[in-house]
Length: 487
Image (cartoon, rainbow, N blue to C red):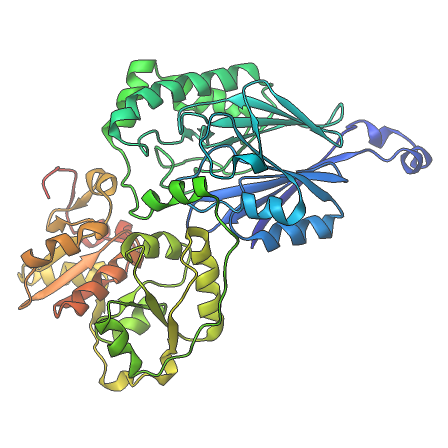
């Protein structure tokens, strides 16, 4: 768990009082705890006054909120949703049910569990302890999106939980409900961001859900991610305030990020009401079982580091390293209804993977095989390389076939002149165009996506060369980088 806690005194002049006075009248404290969902680029929050707390945008991992509240000695009275999420299963309904807390949602949403919710509209307020929760209509990322202004006792800081509205130096994307509504929602997003940033105090701390690498963000975030994220800083740099309406809408239309394939399952599941995660016992399989599972349509995912996989792997396995981006790319590349089994170095890795996958409703693992049980001496393998190796091959006149599997915006920002562009999610659709009689060098920005692509090529009987290197190291090795748009 990656947790950041920031505390503030409600009486900044208290240090001028005597020690006796401090003992008799200790200042109240307002504190926020952030919880990061590694790889998904999302954050949720617990805000409390020392006695009661609210949780905003919880992931499907109730224990970390319950344990944090217990450690702080506070009671969670309300669970707040800014919008129906498109990128992960919410843990809000489950958390509220476990605690008997009030589940707060935006007014106007069509939810299958509406009787269990308190729906708020613009201007509505809720009070719990010394905290006041004020709902602010901020449509754009979704039509009924709310932000929540959280204020405590006099002199304490205020926080605004902006969900997918105002993000870190950006805004949430507006095309996830379809291109036909994207411009309409972009206009609403522009107005909402301006309204929110103009009406709140400049010192108000901004707590967004998306924007830390999430594909729900309209643009990549830049700048600091924590201490300086205030209404004042966003007034100076947020594109919604720096561009007029027409230019803002055009910018959001011009270079939309790709949409991970599993997104289309998230909002419908959240509207039905996501149950808590279900962790069944995972069966340990024999190596010989893998062929049977693959023959019945299951996907075998190997969690090992990319170089270990390249040095020896089961034919047909998909290499998705167990790291920060695991959840997103597993959800993107493994069909949502497909059964899957895992190859891992330990049961602890299996357990970690399914807890990460619970965030998108994929925690039901069919089984696992320990890598130590596999005969990797006679397994499939392929070469790993660096950009220096690729430059040497070009210098020798070999004319290597190079695939760049990064996203379109990355390609357009700069790519190797010798490369072909095939974004990782589109690789299978281009399978018939790839040769099986020559090496295929494959790279991305740092190696993670290239490793997935190399494992796919290997599964298809091709000969990948995994460029396990940072793209920024290509130019120093005299590999020509261009911004031409041809692929």
